[in-house]
Length: 616
Image (cartoon, rainbow, N blue to C red):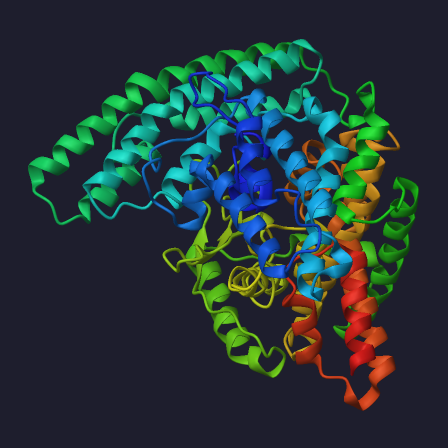
C-alpha cells in the first residue's frame, strides 16, 4: 500500500476515493466520466447560488468518490456491493483521481461566487479550493514517493485493513473478506510493478529500508495456518470472526477452507513475487537518505513543507525554529532536574532517564493498565475544559505482532461515523525498553484524549459540514492539536510526577528536534547517522526510539515538521485571545472555535480565532 492508499483510506475528499479508477485487472475508466457527475451539479447556468446548492455539490462529489473507493467506504462503515474489493491502486488510478479533483475544483470556481455565499459555505469553498491547490502542487512529484517502505506498503497495510476495518456480521460479509484475500494478489502485483518502475528510474528508498519490508513479508509467508503460535494473521483473524457468527459448523468450515484457498492461490504467490523484487532492489539501492538526491528534490521538499505546514516557511526558517525551541525546552528540563535534586549536567540527566530501569515497564499488561488509568482520569476531567465532548468510545490496543517491528511507537485510528468501530489508540510494545514510563502520559494525551480521539470524534460528528471537511485532514492542524493536547494536560492538573512532566517536555523536545533533523536530512544533506547523532545529543530518548524516528523522517519527508509548527500557532492564538479578552476569556469557548470548524489551514484558523475575539 502506498502513502496514497493510506491517505485515501483515512482522509477525506480525494482521500476516500479511487476516482476514475479501474478494477485491479488494469482496465482504467475515463476520469472525464466522473467529472461529468460534478458538472451536472455545477451546471454553470447559475452564478449566484444558495449555500444549500453548494452543499449538494459537495455531497455529489463525495458520492462519486465513494462509489469508486471500496477502502474509503469500509473506513466509513459502509458495507455494500463492493465490500469485497480493493479498488484500483495503479498509477493510472492516481492520475484519474487528481484529474477528478482538479476538474471539480474548476467547476466550483466557475459556478459559485464565494462573496455571495453564507459564511460557513464560503469557508467550505475556500477549504476545497486550498486543498485542491495543495494537491496540484505535489502532483508533479508523485513519482518520488516510495511504494514500499517500513512505514507504508501493501505488505503490512492490506492485512491491517482486513484485520482492523473489515468486520463480519454475516455470511455475505465473510465471503467479501474471502474476496479481498483473493484480490490481494492483484493488488500486491500492481504495486510491485509500480515499485519496480520507480526503482528502474532511480527512485528507491535507502538500502537500510529493505530488511524491514522483507521482514514484514516474511511474517506473512511464515505460515498458512489459522491457529497456533505462528498462525497467519489474516487467516487467524478470519477464523476468529466467523467463529462468532451464528451459523452451522459446516458453513464455518466451508468459509475457512475458501479463505485458505484464496490465501494460498492468490496472496501467498504475490507476496513471494514482492519479496523477490524487494531483494532485487536492495542489491541496487544506495545509501543517501534525503530527497535532495532526486533531480527536482529541492522543489519537491519545498512543496512538501508548504503542504504539511500550510505556511510559506522555508527549510532554513523551520530549521532555525527547531534550534530555538530546543534551547527553550532544555532550559525547562534543567528546572525539573533541579526540582528532583539531580546532580550533574543535562546530558547526564538524559542518560539517567534513558537507562535507569525504574523508568520502564517490565510487562505489556502493566503498560496497558497504566494507559487505561490515564484514559479514565483524563476523560473525567474533560468537561472542565471542553464544551463539546467526544461521542465515540476509545479503546487501547497493542500493535499486532505481524507489523510491530516496523510500525511507529503509537498511532490512532478514527472511529467509523456510524458508531460501528470505536476510536483506537495503538501502542507499540515490541520493545518495552523503547517505551519510557515518563512519556506514557504525554503520548496518550496526544493520541487519545484530549488529542486525536477528541478532535476526530468531534470532527466526524459535525453533520452539518460537507463530507470533505468531516473526513478530511490538514496535517499542521491535526498534529498541531495533538501536540497542543500534550501541553494542555499540564494546564488541566496532570503530570503530577516531575519525571512524567519531564517526559512531556521530552515529547515536545522531540517535535522541536524534528524541525532540525527533517530539514537537516532533506535540505542540508545530513546522513541518517548525522541525524541520529543530533537526537542522541539533544534528547533523552532511547537509541532504538531515535533510530526508528529518523528512519521515519527519511521515508516521510516533511510530515514531521507539521507538529511543532501547528502547535506553536495554536498556542500563539490562545495567548492572543487571553490577552485581548482578559477575564472574559473562556477556554471551553476557545476550544470550540478551534475544533468545531473541522481541520483548516493555519491562516484560516487564525482568521477564525480573530473573528471570535472581535465578536466576544
